[in-house]
Image 1: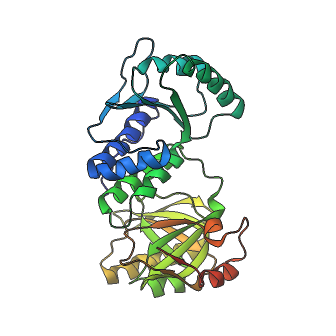
Image 2 (image 1 turned 90 degrees about the vertical axis):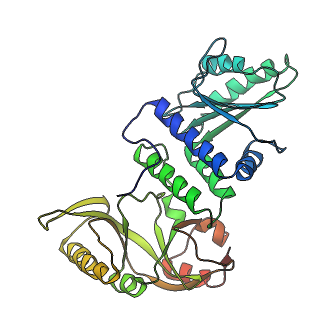
Length: 336
C-alpha cells in the first residue's frame, strides 16, 4: 500500500494550505539550495540565506492569513482558495502581516488564476498601498499546478525522495480538483517499461499502481534503453481491483469498458506474475496503438518514475499531428 504524505478526503481550505506548505517545507528540508532556487526562479531576483519559519494561521493586526513563510529580510504571505474567491478587503488586511521586511510577497493560490478585472482592481489598491511604504509588496497570483511545476523545475530525476513527495502532492491536487485539466491533449507521460515493453506493445496497454498520482495526459510514452521507444494516444483508463474471491471490480475513468478490455486486463494480471507483480489494485491505460519512436535521453541514468512532457513545447507547434507523424518527428529530438 502506498503511504501518502498529504492528507486526503478533506475539502477545507486549511487542509489545502497545510498540504501546500508541507510540500514547500519538505523541499526546504530536502535541499535548502533547491528551495531558494525555487524562490528565485518564481518570485525573487536575489538569493537568500537559510533559516525559514513556516507558519499556519499566523495572526496579524487585522486578519489571519492562511500561512506565512518568514526569514529576516523577507516574508511571504500565502492565501489559498478552493476557487477564484479572493476578496480585495481580505487581501488588503493581509498586508498588515508585513512589517519592515525589504522583500515582501503576497501569494494567492487557487485552482484557477484570478479574473483579470478582479486582479486589476486589487493591484491598483496595492499600488496605492505601496506608495506609502518604503518597501513594496509584490503580488503573485498562481495556481496549484503552476506551483507544482515550479517545484518540478528545480528537482531532477535523481531527487527520488522529492519526486515521490511531488507525485503525491499532484495526486492530492487531482483528487481534490485543485488542478484543472483542460489541456490534457498536449501532455505525454513517459513510463519505464523495460521488462514489460513487448507485452505493452502487443496488448496496447500499460498498467500502474492505482495510488500513483499523475497529471491528466492524452499520450503515453514507453521508455527503455535510454530512449522513449514507443508512443500511443490514450483511449481508455480503467481501474481494476482484484477481490479476495477472485472477482474483479472495474471503474472507468476515461472511455469505456467492454469484454475485450476485461479480457486484456485478466491477461495482464496473469502476465505480471512472470515479473513478480501482484496486480491487485491497478490502473490500466489503453492506447489505440503504440507507434515506434526514438525520443532519446541525452543525460545519464534512466528517469525515476514517470516524466511528463508538453508536446507542443517539445515540437515547437501549437497543434499536434497524428500519433504516427508525432512518433516519427520525435526521432529527431532529444531531451535531458
